[in-house]
Image (cartoon, rainbow, N blue to C red; front, side, top):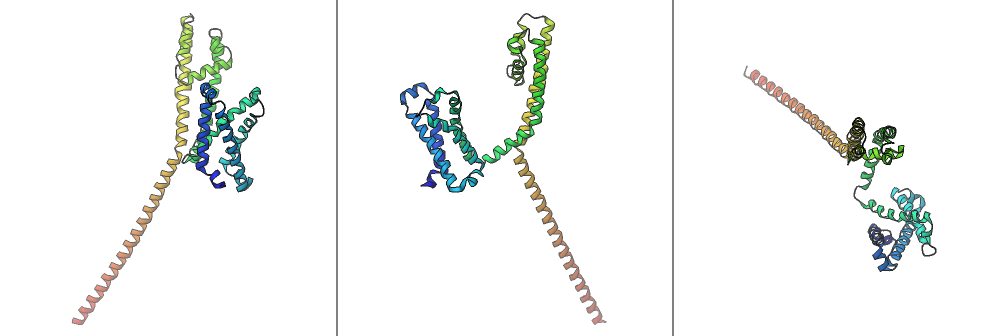
Length: 285
């Protein structure tokens, strides 16, 4: 019975059911039509996940349970969901903190990643990519900060809605970095009736921003990220090539040994034939 309760199939089924319930319960019409049925299904799922964690801890011991990374993630998700267990006893929606923690229920769906094939390799690749991209992200942050400060100094009086303070400027420049619709802000500034020279400054500033931060910066970050994500495949291919090279060297060495042995055997046969011929000549004499 315990094996069934904590089996992967049971966990996956409950996660999918719980996710569907959470999805449907957010529709006002469905929520009113079901009259709390979905809430109690979600509540039962929370009880199950709490029971699952308890059974695993009892089965493997807390140290054994905690030693597995996915178990730690599951345990944190269960903890984030626990405030919702108080819902039948009190109006948790009256407390802002419970409204925030209520979102923790959504993390239960992320447990499905545990059952995705090669999930560990995927997350390891993401981790490597993030570590490798720290430098470029820091450079983009500094670039965004510098351009935001410059934008605030230059355009705060013209477009306070975009450059009224450094934070607004940083957000505006971040949108420019994404390249999507980067021209909308400078075009909007140009329509404010500013001088032709100022229009040139605005457009030049945004062209520099999109070239450095968008096309160059984000493209470089994307290239590094993808390269690190595929490094597993590269290492695998390199290992295969290395193994093949070593096997070829082994075969080549074996062939050379066989050739050497065959040549020595041939020389021995020739020597024996020569000795035999000399004996035959001596016998005739």
